[in-house]
Image (cartoon, rainbow, N blue to C red; front, side, top):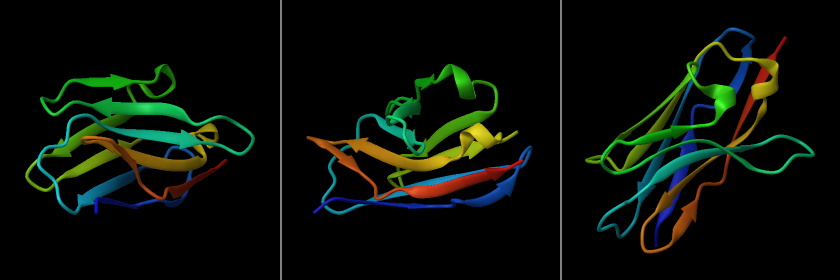
Length: 114
């Protein structure tokens, strides 16, 4: 069974940084695209960033220049480095991984205080 476990969330002041990690475990042959999404209270889940196995990336306009997605294929792990955090970045952050189907993590809370 495939599982995604996120870590690295927490409380940070505006302008600060956090690094999220998401490790994929289980029976894995190959992971295609991996991504980070977020959902703020009362809002729909939205894409933050995604990265292909080859390393091509896509970012939401709201995080370009502040967030960086990366992955370690040997460790089946995807990362999200978040710098210059703003209160509007407050949300539950979810990772996903595309194998033969799409899997999601349980989410990690990120709270940015002003």
